Amino acid sequence: MPRRILESFEVSNLSILDPEGRADPQLEPSLPTAKLKQIFEDMLLLREFDVRAIAMQRQGRMGTYAPSTGQEAVQIAAGAALNPTDWVVPSFREQGLLLSRGVKASTMFLFFMGSEEGNRLPRKLRSLPYCVPCATQVLHAVGIGMAAKLKKDPVAVATFFGDGATSEGDFHEALNFAAVYQSPNVFLCQNNQWAISTPRSAQTRSATLAQKAIAYGFSGLQVDGNDVLAVYSAVDAAAKRAREGGGPSLLECMTYRLGVHTTSDDPGRYRPATELEAWIPKDPIDRFEKYLLAKGLLQSDDRARLTAEIGDRLKAAATEAEEICRNLTPDEMFTYMYADIPDFLRPQREEVLAQSIAIDGDGRAHG
Ligand SMILES: Cc1ncc(C[n+]2csc(CCOP(=O)(O)OP(=O)(O)O)c2C)c(N)n1
Ligand SMILES: [Mg+2]
Image 1 (tube, rainbow, N blue to C red):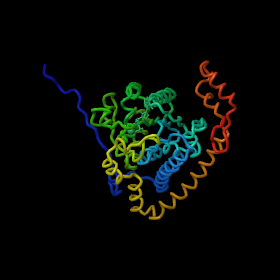
Image 2: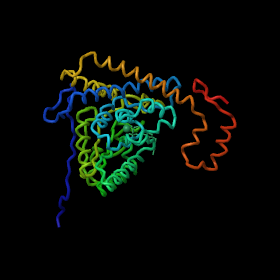
Image 3: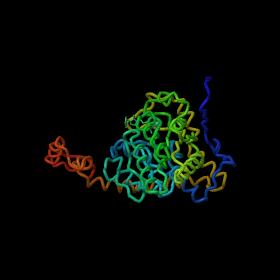
Image 4: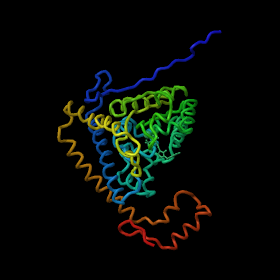
């Protein structure tokens, strides 16, 4: 018997805006003006959030922070394409997604200040809190998807993770289960080309991450992740399919982390400067701004004005978060991990309490 080809497959890449912000008329989504403007404002909000958070971390007013500069299009377009009734399951880099869903900026600041208040998201927002272990959230999202299917709740469940997370076993188990159970999941990979200092080329020999879905029996699409309209269209289609019982999808959004992995990282030690220089002209905000300017939906001085307004709002949100932090006591670190504090932690907690540590007005601990 000769060998026969049983399967062959193709992987596509979707892009709608060209580098100058001109849209492909065949693919351009028709979005109301107010929505386009909101998307632009939310992208600026995420960029300014990074600016303020990094400054606060450098001043000792915030813990380790993971910025999203350069990745605004993926997060904001995804947030805009999902319905408020859909679920979102983030990793640790989705400030933009959560802000665009209505999480308060002060709550996001509180997370990075180490306060448990930063994990308390209003239930109606259908957003899970941040997940720092790489890829464990992808399984949680499939669980939510399977539950929604059992309850006949017509929602999509979108989960976010990085290129590095696709090397984790949890990612593969999650995709397999989602396919087998046809759960309403949208797997959204922010491929920012790096997992701390590990480049995308060292994660996998696959030509794309999108094609991983095909092995599990569903479709994967690579999307220009710096093209806000392409991400919007791809997430919109995948979420509709999920809500209508069409099963899961994987979207690999090609983007780039223009800054540090976190404020504890120095990419200058491992990343070629030429690579960064090549991505700077692909800035997703600049590209979308050109599109809106050409359409007459934005004036040339709008960006500076909006940025200043957002900066003022974020300053007030940061002050609000710092006020809340002033009332925290160090023994809170023992409060939330376990329902019943285990024996080995009891003496440590007692020691902290015995030292009567108080937090003063500057947020510094005193014995
Ligand atoms: C299970 C697990 N292993 C290791 C780490 C340490 N770690 C934190 S972020 C990170 C890289 C993640 O890269 P990627 O998935 O590409 O996401 P990105 O940070 O680029 O958004 C690693 C290895 C972790 N958080 N969880
Ligand atoms: Mg990455």
